[in-house]
Image (tube, rainbow, N blue to C red; front, side):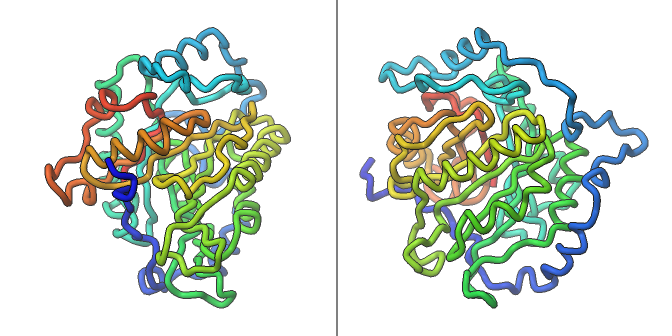
Length: 354
């Protein structure tokens, strides 16, 4: 595969505020006053909520099992890159590599940003349950943790009042996603597209949610426009220093609040989207996933995974599947769980559907 043929995902998030004109940040401010416990109240007939409850202690990591699973998920790698050497063992309660995360991505205000907002909530959760079962069948050795991956800051075509070309979703929508996640016993990722803002300004806004044990974080270099370009005009970038800032911030939250490790998902489908990857710092409190975020036909996706995920190892890997964009070109086929597992080394432990 020629590198210039790299996959370009749909710039679904670069849009006008027409889709979300009914939203207001003031609504988010009101919702911010709600207690975190409001999202975890037990409803009649529901199974006990365990994900959102902070435990007094978490079982320490079984180091022998951890090493065994890292070797298994390296999928017979012969390059020596996998599993990643000298990585720290996580603090107790880690999800990876003990489980595979299967997530639905999107925004509740838009049917165009991903499956999370495209279907009615109950139908969406039923579909997620079906995908979870498919992955469990394809890899019986690895339990599956369902997830909802919500775009909390959206890059847009309008500069807005501060000229940053990004729109912060109201907190009430995050609360709604937390309620939906509880129904599916799912964890939640809050994803940020900074546009002409920066990650240092956006990440702290979500600290009250990140203090919850079931809430994790995603950062999208595609819409990090450090040169002042409008989002959607070119592909953005993050440096290892940006990723280290986020992982350090998350690590402090974990330590201060006695939480299990946070998962940090970094989307990637070109070389320049992540610079100085060798300088990315690994911490016991944070599990870093480099997520292959490109769409296209199977062979194109395979090349992108090989060049930008396999050959630049960080810690764990992810893979994104597009219900619509992956089937646009021949052979008009979205990879199945079994096909993903047969094609890729290492095995991706984070799977995202859009």
